[in-house]
Amino acid sequence: MVGVEKTMQHVGKVLQNIGICENVYEILIECPKIAEESKPGQFLHIKVNKGIDPLLRRPISISRINRDEGSISLIYQVIGKGTKEMTGFRQGDDIDIIGPLGNGFSIFTGSKCAVVGGGIGIAPLLELASCISDCDAYLGFKCSTFKLGEYKAACRELHIATEDGSVGSMGYVTDLIKNINRYDIIYTCGPKPMMKKVKELCEKSSVKCFVSLEERMGCGVGACLVCACRIKEGDTWHYKKVCADGPVFEAGEVDFDD
Image (cartoon, rainbow, N blue to C red; front, side, top):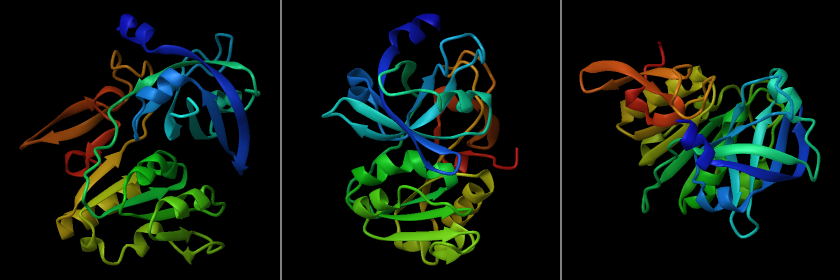
């Protein structure tokens, strides 16, 4: 497994690292090899500083891919020591990356699709939405919003909900999906209760649904069991690794009550 890491380990160059709303940052990294190979829904494993503390890398979903310029952007939320360290990257800094990792989204041409994102979960859906010709977006936030302009440019319809009603409709994003059976496929990422609700709505209307799971990870390449999640295949349940088998799964496979 160490050999796998080494073949996917790269040194990128930080182009910018800026705050885009409260405790949420976007880092733009120049790394042509990763930009060439990345797909929507994959992630990078980031060494967050040049020392040994914190020891573990941080898994961050790819938000945008610019192959012409050889760059990728990541959106991350500051929630602990590792992501706090990431805010210290400056333009011109080298950044140690393993990736692209994981299995991304399947894109079905000719299908009517929608992305449903909550909070930081809107990040990995942005590149996906830009790759689909007929896509709507449903985005939910607690209060502060971000990336709405890019979603508006990428999607036919943009629906927004905030818990405090400061932007769009007041309430939860799942309240906005009134006619889910108008879609062939739903892609979702965000808090587990939100994704569970989206899954239930899709099952009632027989709409195919894919979820992108966010879990704590150790190695990021399938060598440990930190990110195991409960998955159903046929009539049996077992565990898969979010890093290697996901992070994208068909919603019907995932046990959100585990």
